[in-house]
Image (cartoon, one colour):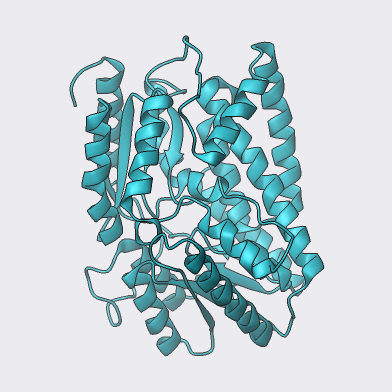
Amino acid sequence: MSNAQATEQSERILKQLVDKGKPILGYVYPHTPLEIIMAHGVMPTLLYANPTVMGSYEASLQTFACSFIRNMFSQRVNDQLPYVDGIVFPGNTCDSLQNLADIWHLRYPQDKIFRLTYPAGDQGEAAVQYFAEELRIFSNSLEDAYGSPFSDAAFRQAVDLVQQFRDAVQFLYAARLLQPNSVRYHRIAAFVREFHSAPLETLVDELRATVNDVENSLAEADRVDSTKALQHALLERRLEDVSLPSDLPTPRIAIVGGMTEPLAIAELANVISKVSSTAVVFDLLSFGFKTIFTPMPAFEGDLFETMARSVLGALLEPTQEGLPKRLDFLKDALTHLAIDGLIVCEQSFCDPDEFESPSLLAVASEVGVRTVRLPIDSEFSDRARLEGRIQSFLETVAHGGAE
């Protein structure tokens, strides 16, 4: 499935839901609590950049605003978000997104605009309590806007659905690390894209079937148990004891970046097949690993507090988690997962991405992993250059040369 096909399919599904009377709430930040939105009978859908959108931001946003928010605002101005009647924006994560929320509310006061503010930094229990209260306020706002109170039963169903999805994709991530030919990276990325577009049981059923096929493939090499062990190690972020087979195909490439969507990168990296279809084995992209390897919320005690612990237990962004933990995990991943090359995606005019990149590159250099920086915009407007840069890098890594 291509990026364009995924967008068309998402629009068809959303239209069907709207026709059935289901309200749709868009979101743009990967760590938005889908379970709480679904507990109010609302369908969350991740909003993506649309490469075909015409620019319409000039009257409200600076020209140096990041390409992602320019694209989001242009879609609204051009009425290209027909099935979304509200959007939840993050607070305290990105100045551009926060400014976009303010401008959106001013220009389109009829839209339902929500803001969910995240704690900054690793402040332990204080951060959990703060975010739990933010989630409670967010839930109350959803009830006021949609007239649907928080349902414990719907919340538990949503948690179960999201967890089934995460468990399955976690297994696929681990499988590709151990036996790359067992599942295509593009296939994993497509599942992530589809579920974030519309978290439905039908997709989870399809995902289970894929997992069964992959398990059968792994069983032939007696690698099912080791795959599950690696899945657990990734979830716990404890990679020191990971044991990989000695006959893995090379090169092994990891991708890291901020607001970059895995399916778009997978499509962009189709040139990889000219070198090796098994090359991309791991990603730390916002809508990939970071949202999949999120701990399940417990059902005991205050549900908003358990939800806060779940969200904050994920690998977050620089503004929430800070660099040290993220860099330590990246170093462990590059070292213990036998990574040969690292592609660093840099969203155009995104300060968190571009401020973080030098540190990511330094960690890779420290452990002897070759790197390439990939400056991108949300529309992939310079696709030919990007593909050429990726292919050149892969050929360099494959032949053991210096980048």
